[in-house]
Image 1 (spheres, rainbow, N blue to C red):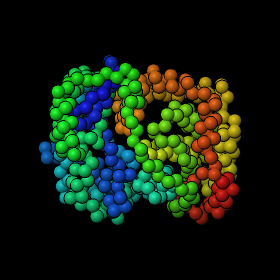
Image 2 (cartoon, rainbow, N blue to C red):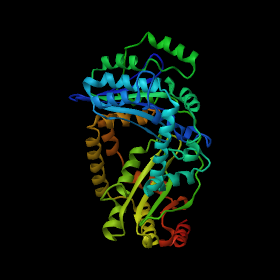
Image 3 (tube, rainbow, N blue to C red):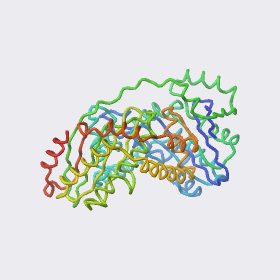
Image 4 (cartoon, rainbow, N blue to C red):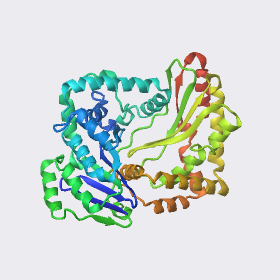
Length: 453
């Protein structure tokens, strides 16, 4: 069962109590990421995330580390294209302290100039780390190329030249603009009493103000009368489907071929196709399609490329789904001399899958695998907390585990083949390569790519 309510200052809360759990996962998800940046401040969302751990008005960075350690040393954060999150997991008796820590870090960061100077070096080391990781670089590069005129294609970590120039004043201004009540969602799951959670969260996050003071005050006055009353949604998604979906502009997709030269032994190849956005109702069909095509060891792609031909150790498919757009990826790590051959083999797998889809037997086996993986993953409060937040942030339907299993069961072979034909269109395929140019026939690879179009 889900609970949804709004704190007096306008922060939304999604709660999913889980019976017989002695742990609690809690996260604050802020609707700001690299897509909210400009070329002049690209990387500032990620830098703010780092600086949240470097001290508040109440606690030093060492205090934060000590509190975190006492709660199990499982407090962390991340920045993505669309959101920044500060989250943690601890035992149930420490849940209130976890809420207080997260609330303080969000509301009262210091952005001390000396700490900022030190943390910039850490962030720039992280940027170098991503650049040294061919698997990460090939993913980020293809985003940048296919969405080259949109901020959704910006590197989440930014660039060193820009990060160097960001000062404390910019961080304060960016934080004040985006870290406001209307932009924040609190997601909680695990072992706790719902009536206690409401009071903990209000006390922990009451210092966070609204983006528009007058509007926030009116909202607070209206909601204050109903404070402490949780709204049970049964089923939860019925409430959300009543809400209007904002008209958001999708980025233009540019079909691209890109190469980054790196002195490494293997070639990392990433293919990308326009996929579906997170709002798309076909997300369960999409999940089954991905698993069957390349998302598991018994998938068509893995069995053909690795098991049958032994051409690549790592080959798989995955999706990048956002509120405004999405990509369907195929990732291959291969010896440079096999690049052209493996591309042709992957092309063949794509064409066969689009033409023939899945048999009833394959579909049944794939569904069983996905349902098993889903049940196992959602045993964790942290997984439920994260999943609930991901869809609640964009006001999409939330489903119970039983509803998700039913949705998977409803997927048909016809839906799979229809979606595959839409997504895996080789005329829209983009390709990015990271590796040693000297050892690879890149001109041959580009010809093969052009021919596939």
